[in-house]
Image (cartoon, rainbow, N blue to C red; front, side, top):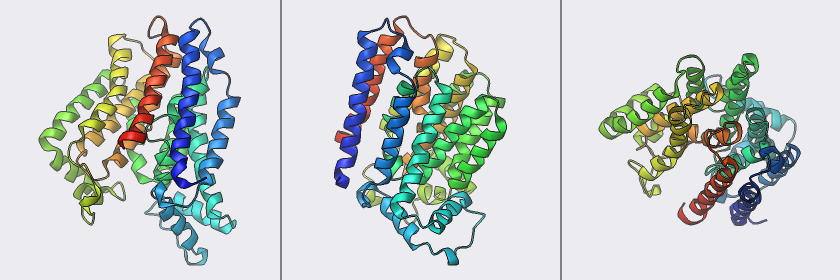
Length: 364
């Protein structure tokens, strides 16, 4: 298949599946959510098929950094490689292991895509066991899912390992959760932010209201002192691209059609905060797992808001946006929010996936 067809075909598939599941909810509200969503076999097969399909994509710069990753992988000479423990050593080790095994670039990409997609599926299965199909549809239909499967693949894989780590940490399986956090950090150091935010939600911030208040405050901080805050975070150097993006040194700014305060990104990011406010504050539904997920999202997204003027700010946004589908889907599947919840869930799924398809095909 031609590279230019990959994203439209993917979006058409996800929209079709969303319509199938969504209209079952809308038209048959008397069925249980588990009956309408089915078990875990179909979404598992779907994820495996997508992993191979994405992994064996053409090597093309239409997929963004796919070409760069392919070049780095092919040009890596094992005998000349020395591990740099101050960089993302897990990612380096993974490339060396694949090169030693004689894997081609397509097999390398397939392994990355498999880890990216199946780690998300495993996390959804653990967090929303009653309906993994519906939960996974929210993940697959999220705005950045395809992009981070073919473009920012290192960041995407690392963030989904954090997602899986969260599912273990919430279940008090700290050894596995911490191991996954370390693996994610060794793939992309920027995951330190969602890891720290998750532990803050588990041990420090027990009331979601405080994280929501901090999220709102971050907007005013960014408007008043955004450049100062960006410079402060750049000086920390926890991400290998932080200084470059926040200071725009060495970057041709003609590549960016829009910089500055991104109100459109902010409005998109606000939807999970509104959902968290409605469930946790307005309805006062207490669920310790959901409280942690909401807190992690609000803290990570607040960080992005404070550096929103940076070039490539979508890279920072993804450090919260990978939690976006969980904040939306978790209460729809696990918590009693409304009467006639099934029908509302169907409409929300259709609006969610339809918005992503519209933005990716006609706006971005």
